[in-house]
Image (cartoon, rainbow over all chains, first blue to last red; front, top):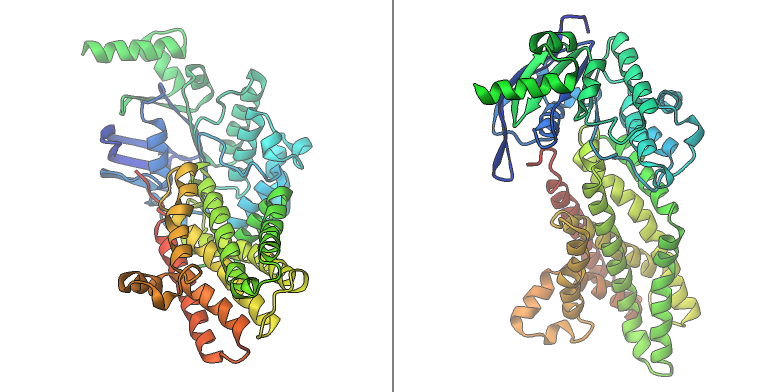
Length: 241
Length: 244
């Protein structure tokens, strides 16, 4: 995928969950070959938007196009890697068994599985059952199960939540490396500090896109010193308007 | 449908079963203990020969129902099913994968339980032992397919476990074990004519009472097979790629 292409195109997306509208006509484009952060407070609709992108969310109206096809199309299932918010791997299997199984579904061989395990730094824990791993190790095992197929687009729902600062830094460095290889990433987080690690930012609050910008653009626009105060400034501006 | 992905999924489920030795132990030992208990209770009477084989069909059905419905429900609640449905794995592949894995577990269970009943408990059968085992395996696979279907309607583990008394016990009551099916009140007899366990028990009883019941036995087996296929098809309809 060339730079300047669009990986995800969302237009007028409205989603209702449990009788409540959680996305209100969201329109946004995610460029290819970049790390795009989807930031905002919990309950703002981040997971719902992500579920719509991978095609597992019932939507009320609007269109989601992923890598040129409607979200959830059969032809996308090898090209998109999805990591759910809570680690979705089998607790009673080892890391290696999990990654090999998910890899085999997308046609990845065993050496690809070893590569993916090494990428998330779980090489020394490959033979450990997931139920005996720490929370952070579990979420990395879940990430490896998505990386194994070398998907063109990675959609990650809060992959760094609960990780220590060193691991978080390492993972964001990994995301940048993947983007440099030409892969596209949509990464959600509710930690505003992580905004600075993205190429682009989407701020989602109460089911609406508050900002679609770059980290520098966000700071320049709001005159704030850091991402957190910039986000607060944007919210105050919206409330005042 | 992609048979390769179904087999890969079956292999993964088997690895999960293998990782839990206590479940494997329970699967194999519990039906044998129950058969032994029954043989002991009715020691010196002809009753064990009458109902032993029928219960040999009921136990694997019940055990596989519970194990399968909980296993697939776990897949739904842990988020792994949502993830799987974003991969090339089809819904039918998922169901067939589970059917392969638990079908193999059912074969092991039925072979051990039938051999134990005949060689240890002294169950006398008029037909061939391999026919008894074959029917026991089919009954276990039926329980598995029924469990897969039931788990589609359960939202929590509590609900899944309670489907056992709700969906299985009425079948046990109406299958002819307590009151011969032709002596049931009309409405109940019609009901028992529809329920799959009736045919499972009928088939087991035919194997024990006569060596030559080919025609009836085949029609019982065909009904059981039809229920297995129908349950798997209906079960795959309960898998939704998109959820609210």
